[in-house]
Amino acid sequence: MQLFVPYGERGRMSKLKTALLLVLLLPIVVSYDSTRTIPNPVDAIAAAVQTASENITGNMRAGKHLGFDTYAYPGDDAMAAWKKDGAPYEWVGYYLPSAPCHKGDTWGGKRQRLTDMGWGLAVIYVGQQVWTGTPRQKIIVTRYMSRRVKQVRTVRGRRTTHYVTTKIPVKFVTYARAVPSDTCSTHLVTAARGTADANDAIARAASEGFADKTVIFLDIERMDRIPDAMRDYYTAWTKRVLDDGRYRPGYYTHDFNAKSIYDDVASVFVDAGRVEQPPFWIASGRGFSEDKEPQEVGHAFAQVWQGILDVVQTHNGVQLPIDVNVASVASPSSAKFASTE
Image (cartoon, rainbow, N blue to C red; front, side, top):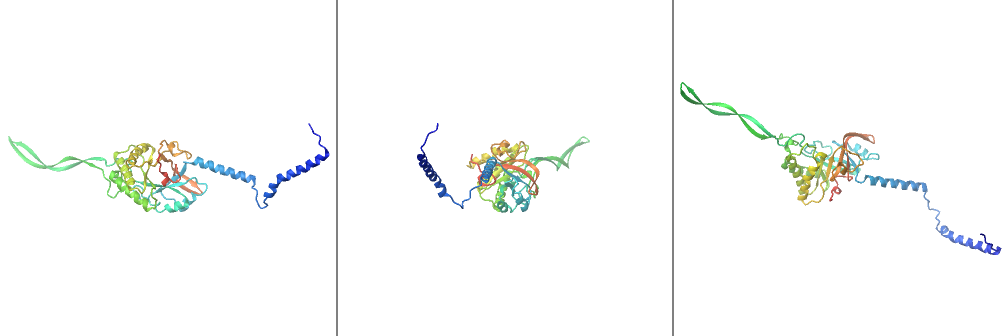
């Protein structure tokens, strides 16, 4: 429906509309700044997408921090290259030099420069190992001893007695021992040696400049069974590190032995009044993937999972032989690694 408006009224309404329009536009005119740059909407959208992508990636990698370990220090240039864009690793295993069963010293003195490069660290102490032997194995030895033996003879109806010297076999029980010059031997796996090696690990970590509360991972290689002597060794090592208080004991173990070792050392933690879980670095290739969390190795107490052994990778033109790991934090030996759950 249309309404009829007289001509004079139309003029007045037109002026009224113009006035209203000026009122509405006034804030825009007053606030306009010719020096202000108006954002490009395409760039703004791209930046928002990039930020969202980074947040999603960060969330997906939470609790999944890749690291590697390798026997010898690769060199400063190699480590710098592997820290550049395109390399996925955040932390590296740091072997304490000249440990009992790791004779290399190439990692010695590299802590500060690795930290300056931005590397997280996992400190490793390779102590005594069982390997495939039996610690202090019982040995039965047969030796021949000279003895005077009484002999009685009857000659022409008369008994005669005389003595002769002869050698007779005698069995002795002894135990296998390490060669005096050995510092790494199955036969050094004892409680006393566990305490001594703990003192050695503490001294070496301090010499390398590691801060208080740093986790030192005791390397315990796979065993078909855990001898009592090995239990005595790593529980004594644990007790001594806890008693000293400067550093915190952690453990590198194979999945096959992990639960038994965890039960043993957790008991030592409880006896020492410690409420945190012992940090465990567990080796197992079964079901490993770089996008999995450490606990998915099959142990709720796992905080590092080593899943790929002896692989050669190339990043930024540098090739290295490594083992691949995933950790729940970006620096497994840091003070933040302890769990109170």
